[in-house]
Image 1 (cartoon, rainbow, N blue to C red):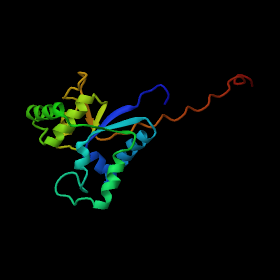
Image 2 (cartoon, helix red, strand yellow):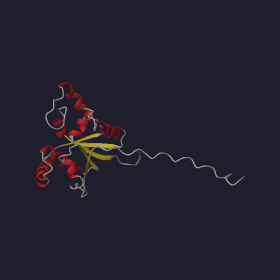
Image 3 (cartoon, rainbow, N blue to C red):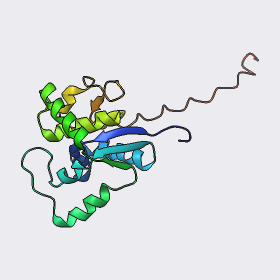
Image 4 (cartoon, helix red, strand yellow):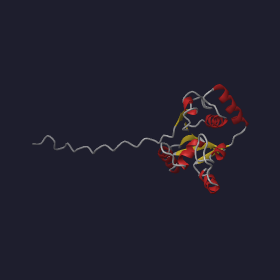
Length: 176
């Protein structure tokens, strides 16, 4: 897409796990957005905290850790050129704590870190499947640029409209 900047999205660890584990109800949209990133249409931002969180087969609740053999694959996976990992620094830590205090639905420090990072980056969208926490904050929290943050599951761009049928030549329409 010459001249057009890629869409900037933030993925939390549940989104990456949905893709890695090909979870039903998650994998198709994650894969579609991932392919948009491969094609240069999307940049995926995340926190380096994600590197620690993506270690088990399920995002919520008890989950079986992924195998040690998969560690290197996961590290390589998170280092693709369309992934932009961000450092968790003091500013993000403090913002995370304040977000958890101000928004009761932001219950876990990990959610606070992901949300604070997405807000600091002023991404176009934050992608998550965290329905009990983060999705409830869609449009209610302002990014660093002052605009509300869209928080949603990964949503691929809509397909292009079908081409219009060719117009018929009306030159001879009135002849009989």
